[in-house]
Length: 115
Image (cartoon, rainbow, N blue to C red; front, side, top):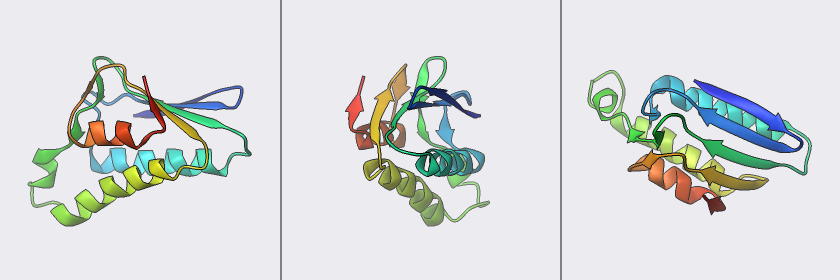
């Protein structure tokens, strides 16, 4: 789902999960990847990208309204990822390979740069 490729001191986080919506597994994978990159020695940079024609299609509304999760907790967990990107201890770049809607677009906007 999430792969990390290290090129010199640039960490490339690639999400490869169809439309790259924020699922329960995706949120966990994002946080684990960000933990790993934050723990790496500095200086560094983080580039995030998607796969296929999607950078990220945002929230998984079916999951959010399924009754399997508290919608407020789900939304808070996605917003927490945005917060982490906003204050990430490295330069961040959203390499937007394709569509970015809703929370996916907001994640991109949380980066220092977007291309």
